[in-house]
Length: 115
Length: 113
Image (spheres, one colour):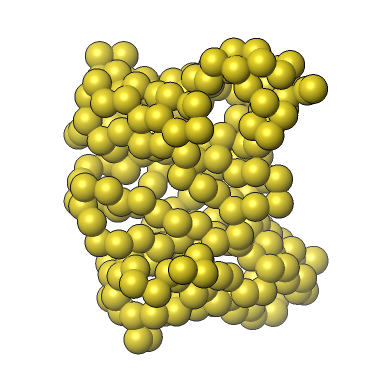
């Protein structure tokens, strides 16, 4: 068990550029989540997948954001035409589909800075 | 909507002091409640959880009891160590069918030797 892995750890980009982040969940976990955390705040839910199906998207996920999990394993989060307000830590988590537990394991996050 | 409110920080304590971080929640159903901890430079880790009223979660000397009557899930530790310095987040998942977590803003705890 290598834990949840996120890549890159840090990303600096210019406003208007597109960025893509990757998340590799714990191998047997069928649920995968994306959260966003800004300085001094708790994580905010963005979206989640059960296997390859994207089951819920937050209203925080504007049209510029898209997430995929093509084979039910790793996931990508893409932000198009980045804005300075997108600067945040993007967290990925995974869990087993166990209704009674819902224990989510988090990666270390990708810190995005939009200049 | 469902939400969590936790005590503002930062909190600074001496080693062996008693720690309590208040957390209250608002939810329409019967949520599951969690405390997550984020040590410096590391990702969020589950500290403890409780899934129904009067359940007590415990781990690493920390405890929290799910109080439905006061809609609270306060975190306590009787004797803190320097290694407990971290940011602590209270969180809920609204129902057993709703997997997303709603987090509080976090409380920064610093323990001095």
